[in-house]
Image (cartoon, rainbow, N blue to C red; front, side, top):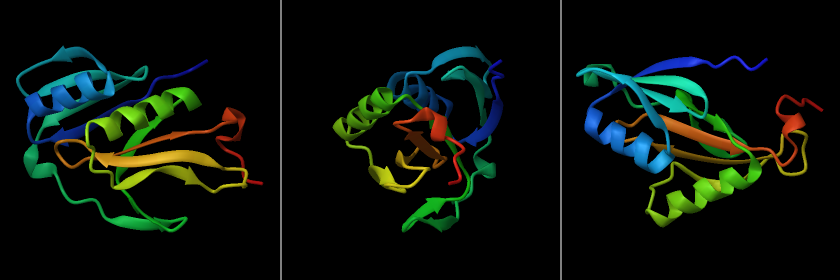
Length: 139
């Protein structure tokens, strides 16, 4: 049984946030008010709250030679969907924090990954596994 998660996060501008998540990422909009918007984020509920004072620069941690923003969220997409999103983000001129590439090549956790920021500076990671059964593989 799949159980959807819920994540609430701060943003500085609801209009820019809606444009990004709805029109670029492809999320449907759920409930909303003047201070927040719910999005259907690949079957999960994320809520953008208008709270610019809560935004901070994400610190990074080294992972496989990349400086990964520690505070981030995203989705694990099917292989072809990940490549379609990567192509779309390249086409619109996304300023990637970490460009689309393959990480942990030849290892059990081999994955395609990319990082970019939303309009409020929240870090997003999208990843994919050629073999989805390796999502939690350790050896």
